[in-house]
Length: 111
Image (cartoon, rainbow, N blue to C red; front, side, top):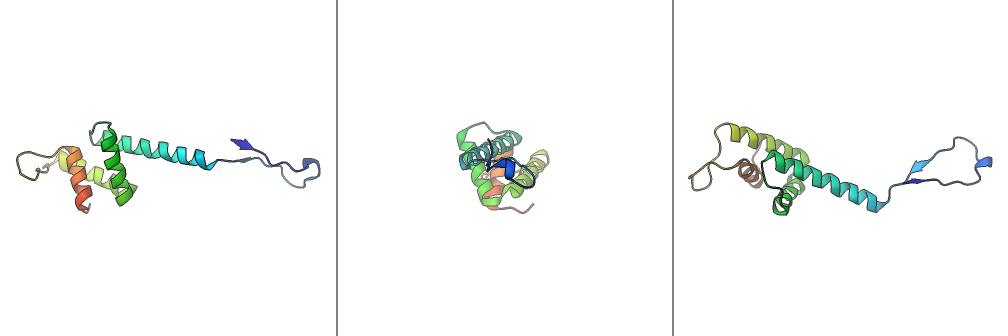
């Protein structure tokens, strides 16, 4: 939204400037869209379904660990998944890519 605060421009010295004013509601909506896009990008990178439960879990990891740390864990999980893999708790099979990520996020494993 473009807003002007004009006070007798004919007598105003100096430059005439227009300022963009963003309302708090617009800021919140922009932030929500950005967060939603980030969680969708991470879910796709992990091969997870586009579901509210997955988005909630990823958002929780971002809140607890931070965006940078979550991005590092995604890369680490992809490396583990491509390489030796990671067994589930009972050892019967390998974890999925998302399972490796959530395990790393839960245990707070170092990169």
